[in-house]
Length: 135
Image (cartoon, rainbow, N blue to C red; front, side, top):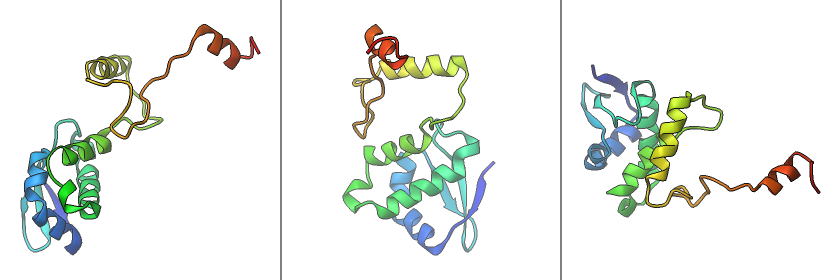
């Protein structure tokens, strides 16, 4: 079932200027009336519940991005950022294990696309210091 979105004039322009990029990223959208669009598909990693907010966030990012950065993998990275697990989000043990397995299968599991670390190593001595067992 398509999700009907009422877009602002600015959002409509962004959709029209970036239709190919949006489609490459996994969004399929088409005009559905004067100021409405039907969002017919979203990237599978997003999920239906986050579809509209992820799409609107993507439009905002595309509107702010330089034209040469609006194509190819940059758009896919935008989707990935907007669908990432957020701090405080609850995951099941199975989801956590799957996430770590997928991370370790990547080419560079130690940092995210922005260069921030995805994991740190703590030695037993580091843990003892953290729990004030050693100075």
